[in-house]
Length: 334
Image (cartoon, rainbow, N blue to C red):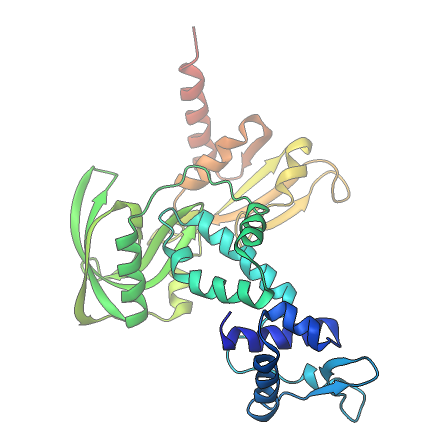
């Protein structure tokens, strides 16, 4: 544990325990008496930490303010500061990121920070592994992204530089070359996407990172798109196909009472509207209205609920769902 980690560890112990003996501090930090004395003196003199020795309790604590509040409550070391519970939360989030990131790009870059946090807690390697085993992320239908593309696009996004892409188009199984200005990286349903201004089509587009075949950063400065404009163009409709030039529509879905117990706790879209139809909340059928421009993903999610949902009002969408169900049933006929 280096000196910076020891400083944070000392403050963490005093905040969480109130009063800590010299022997307890030594045991937690694993240092000599002389080193601990120097650390305490440095915190007092150079970092203005209100640490005092309490003879009655035979330990060190933060001194009390005139109004009775602990001075230590207002004191913070410069840089990052986390409470013990926040450190545990950060370590848990690290595990979540590791689960989302196939090649470990995010987890690898955050690893030095995680080591610092573990040092502040005094967590050894065995205890750290045990902590990580207590959080399990199960990802399904995950599409892998080469780490080199993720890091390149992340760097271009922060540096506000344009990027050249060779992009695979699944619709016609062809490829195209694009010059884009990165605006945002999005992780949606275990898949990474790049929201960017496409200079070829002169508009905002969303690119799946797993469909990028080649990429390189250009010298040209990226075009900046205000966040409000970006959200309005790409987030208005349902799912990852929510953007585009198509007119926004509203789909009305009515779920059976059984399915409603699950769907009522789900957010399909930030702007969704919902109500219970046959009685108080938790009873009867459930009506959900969501905006969409492209029906592709909405259709897939409706089909996932089978005969537990009916599309009402939108004749075109209802006819499309009915046709898909008939086609699916025909494959099992005979």
